[in-house]
Image 1 (cartoon, each protein chain N blue to C red):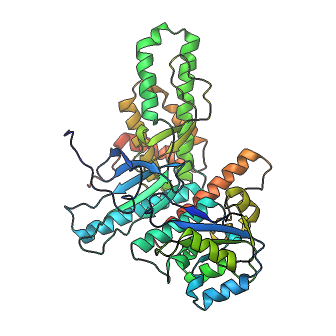
Image 2: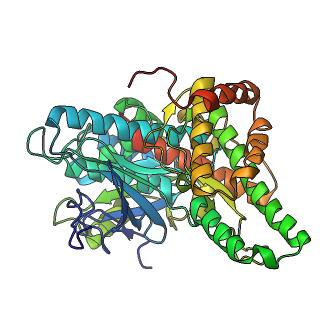
Image 3: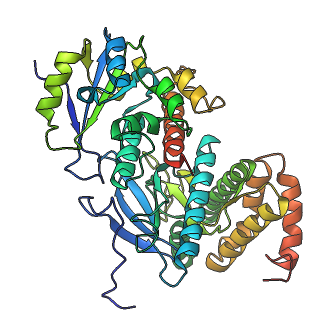
Length: 197
Length: 273
């Protein structure tokens, strides 16, 4: 089976800095992966994101863009561009808190993995092979449909302090649902863009 | 105007963008480009506030930074409150390359709104009416008038929602009101000018957060004057905008009372500045 690993070329970022992204469900070894991050194992330098905290592709992409743009301008607030992606998803300025809320935990089942090609050795093949050997989980498409089954909208709204917004899924009306999700998504994107202002 | 005008070089990361962002318009403070969002299939508007070489670099950085953040904060707040404005997609206020000699500008990427500005809609409609009004029967005339009235009423309603959310625009003109093109247009009348679609407020470069009647009334007054001077045929229908505004939120009545004062004396309360 071909790898589900997607090469994401975010517009405006240099073509030489693609992000490799893959979404897993039913991950079995989250505790191990988290341990590798904590011990600073370079082999495991990824953005390991708790996918239940990701609303949509646009949400994840905004975090990647913010982190890579800050990386290019040499103003990272955390160790590396991968930890910065996890930090960028969080609207608040607290790094430890963003790992707790958006990063992998021992009980994470749904995991979004991002790797930015910050050095020439990092290629689609190398990332795909390493992830296949290290993550015990089921790769699924990284799209809004799949994410909508995974994301915990209530928790996301709470972290972003957007409790007053209508929840997509509250209403049976399809058009209203789409509108509510769009409004929530745009609110997340602006919060990510404005962090630290 | 010189034909060989070259806009300032794009800041990073937009030097990477393919195809390059397309310059649409430029104001005193900023250049507006059309480009793609972070999703290549979705367009976006990019507002760049370039570095101003005639200002002291530290002052320039601070002003540019303040203004772009203020604009983005207003837009973010309005999206959260459900007012129709373009959402903020990405933002950079820090400039690049250190304090000295670096690029001290800032940029703001926003949602792209598809549709004409209200100024163009009214201009087209007025031009058609000027030429052809005599050929319409009274029912048709009434229908045309009703369409403009409805448009103005919707504008009033949208401004009410804006003010209710605690933001004043600061530069309301019919060029800063857009009509988002709906999926299908059903009524263009004999004029061929559609007035359907959601009113979207744009250009919050001079906006600020305020709940004061004075600021709100000045917002309305500025738009009234703008319509009066650019769309004379629509001016007599202006009362409709006030109606739409009045019904929009609770504070509207006192704002409209203040609007009467402002009409008497003009935009400036104090005679300073």
